[in-house]
Image 1 (cartoon, helix red, strand yellow):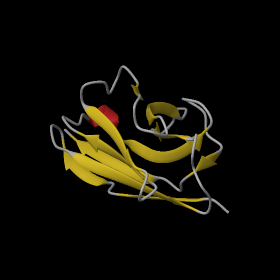
Image 2 (cartoon, one colour):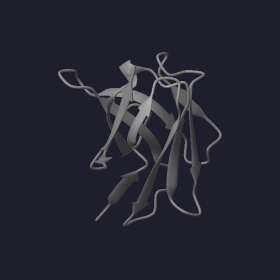
Image 3 (cartoon, one colour):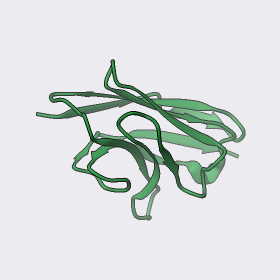
Image 4 (cartoon, one colour):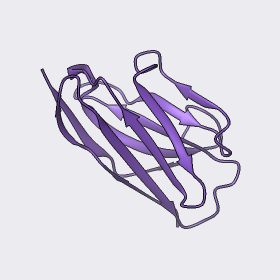
Length: 118
């Protein structure tokens, strides 16, 4: 059984930074894309960023490009999302995901709340 456990969410003032982590367990994850999605109140879940299995390719939504950086440590089966220059509109529940392709998810984490105050 696959488990994805997120950590690192919290409250921060606009312009601040947070780092999210997602530890995966339960199977081997070779060839899987690891990614982050988010869902703000009253809105649909949206893609934020993804990284290929070897970490050679990264993908980001235009809204977070140049502010958020995704990385992964395959030895630890962990993916990270470094979020800088946070804005109030970044407030959402952030979900870690495993998928076969960018923007898809076969497995989801439980989510971690990120709140950015103005």
